[in-house]
Image (cartoon, rainbow, N blue to C red; front, side, top):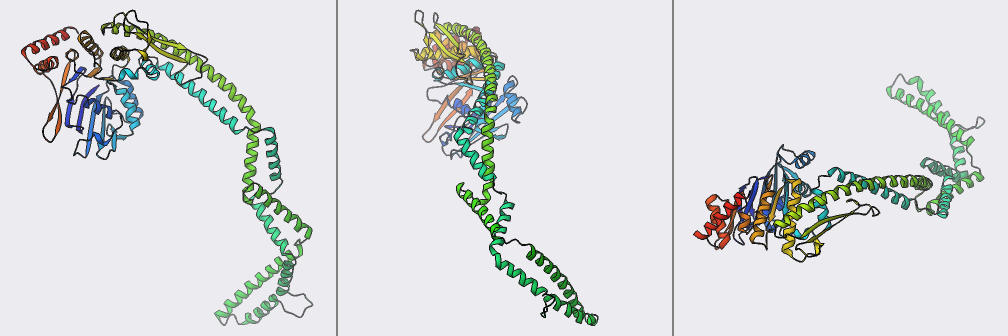
Length: 561
């Protein structure tokens, strides 16, 4: 229930603070006074799109705040708890709109997205505008109206779950068939490419080893000569007169060692010569081993060259670097494996989809039965209300048909059509084709009132839905709105006195204009003020006669509870 509304620097409103009570509140005022501004403000608080045009001229930003009681609104409380925005039985919506057009939204002081405030807003307030009856001609709105008031949430949830399961499996099958759509000839070619790659050493280590071996073999005689020269330089043959490096180092060391105790520098030099002698000996041994075992066979060189050429050719063919061939091989193997195994998974998916479709059809059938039962009940209630609204003898029927062969959808296998006749003797026709806009507006109101029982905790706001009616019908509209608010809260912007007198409280909107500014002010009317306002609405001016008529209407409305 809406408890309080604060508006600042919004449109032509400098500041308003309004407290609301349970029951039916009529919002009245002269034409053009700005009665619908409060509805616009609530619409923005509930997530409507904003722009800088809403900011009062000269102000930096507009500020809107609404306080709601959630004592009888479990869905809204659950939503807030799930979003970690709960403040027990209270909810405060706040929105600011800057002069640059940017807006910010808050729930209980926490910044939120527009999507979040829209989701919560649907659980708090339902606004019925002047063109509400046009929305009801759309099938989507008709389903929403029927399902939101039926009390079969479990069946709706089961249907949505079953549909989601079926859809996910169907999409997986479609993706599988697209991904594994490989013809036998293509599969043969892919296998050939994989075989080519698997015959080659493709790891980074193997390619590096092959390249190194190729470079060593390519060096050939030059490498062999360098190894021989190095060995001879380190230690010549025993029958040679030439001294090698090792001999020179050892001879120098032997000559200096006797003096190492006389000078630290000599001792240090002797230590380095000893290490050099060891290193040279190890180098000689290693080089001799390499020289004696190196394979410089031209046939082996040709073999290694051919392997590198084959790898280069494969890299060119697959348009990758040589070190990327291993990834190409793995991708080919994976694709072939998926293609080979996809048939098994495809058969599994086909079976799972069939089971999911069966579950969906069962859920859709159960939902259809609930919908049909509720549609019949709702049709009877609407027809009774139509009689009160001056359409006695008419007909109203919500026809829910079941088409189990239809393609699955999120709303089930049902089709809905509302057939009406506003006058006796007139053949029923689709709601969308009724001739009179006024009749359609009244029927829309009857539908909303009949369907409102399941959402008593939601604040219902009606913005001049009584346009184009008068007399006894206006009285009936007022009584319907009063009845709608008995267990909840209803606000109605109205220009009809017959509607306003049915309200439990009346809010007057006044517009004051001088040469430089225009401002809107409001106030809840006491009993005397209310009589004057009703009198004005009846005759356009206040007189003893119009006051007497107003008092008569107010007394009659109170007695008609």
